[in-house]
Amino acid sequence: MLSYSWTELDVQGTQMPNSISIIPLLGIPEIKPGDNLVKMSIDAAFKQDVTIEDRDILVFAQKIVSKSEGRIVNISEASPSPFALEIGKLLDKDPRIVEIILGESRRIVKMDRGRLIVENTKGIVCANAGVDMSNVSGGMEATLLPKDPDESAKRFAEEFKKELGVDVAVIITDTVGRPWRDGLVQIAIGCYGISPLKDYRGKKDSKGYDLRATALAVADEISSAAGLVMGKTEGVPVAIVRGYEYERSKEGAKLLLRDPDNDLFR
Image 1 (cartoon, one colour):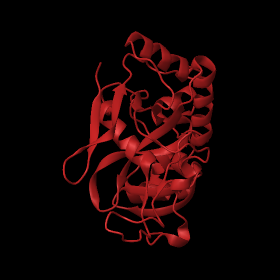
Image 2 (spheres, helix red, strand yellow):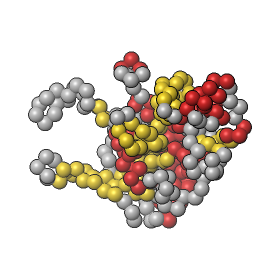
Image 3 (cartoon, helix red, strand yellow):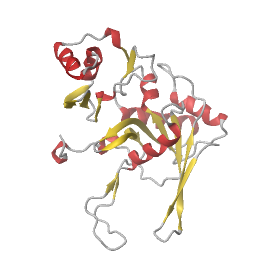
Image 4 (cartoon, helix red, strand yellow):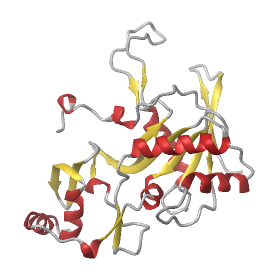
């Protein structure tokens, strides 16, 4: 069984009691609209002799969630508006794709050097509103983000409970870039059953210092860790994260969205 495992160490190098394992689920086929991702994940786990357990975290790549929910558009059917034509010319982008992006956006955050950064309809700031043409149909179709990733995660968690009788958390991830740093990482765009933030504010560090601004984005950290076994070309769209002691929550990944009043870059 393939997995990555980490064990926490204290500052003296003494082993701490908790560790996590990340198990890729292999053999999940190409996803079509209407496919049941939970049953497909259970089948894949069974074939690997992996038992899905209470407090496991099931991490799903956005692309298969979007495909299963039919969030696929044909680029040739898009009719670009005059505004989309103007942006397409400015950024050297296909105006049909620009029109699709605009349809998934609340507002444009930044346009420059061929890049279109927007706030999508769920408040997530990302490139191209998450519209993606990779791994769809050779460039003539694009996937959109799920309509409500938190609701999708909730539905999956409830289906795992129904099928297996286990209480699991679910995270739906997408790939994003980051200001000031090269390279892409996975973040949580939807989750259920796990608090996406671990808040240390009001507590003291090991030296007695009062922590005032420390809230860890654990759902994003788990997403990026799972990305190590999921990859972009390996064909592994689901992974199990096991052993992390998380706080249960039903609030979803919307807690990770920064209030614009506290955002220095919008």
